[in-house]
Amino acid sequence: MSNLDTALQAIPYLQTLGIRTKHAQSGQAVLQLPFQTTNAAHGGAMHTGTLFTVGELTATIAAATHPGFGFLVQLLKCSKIKYTQPAFSTITAMADVTDAMVSKVKQDLTNGEASLEIPVSMFDTNHKPVAEMMVLFVFRPNH
Image (tube, rainbow, N blue to C red):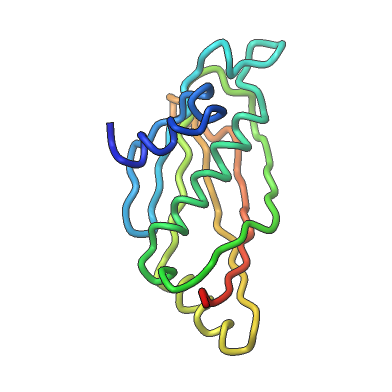
């Protein structure tokens, strides 16, 4: 188990969901949400709330692991999700913070406030998209 997985399992809600890290490094995060009875809705598909949770968490880890944001405080401001089809299998959520995104935040900070939308893609085990998410963060200097 990775250090990140250990940290995630220390949060009771995330432990119940069973979210695991597949990959996390320098602005990239890939998390998996297992298909299990505790994550299913009344119709047998993955509960939409669990997809929302793994999406926000994936974007947060991608932002937190990028070295370009090490000197900043990040605050999650807003999340929007579009569900494209019901999920009946383990979900993989992916987010990537590019160097261009970091440059934009640094440039915007010179004018005061900086914000950034991080896209998250979610797929089932057959690589079919089940949801797309945009997670908006606001950044400020860490004083």
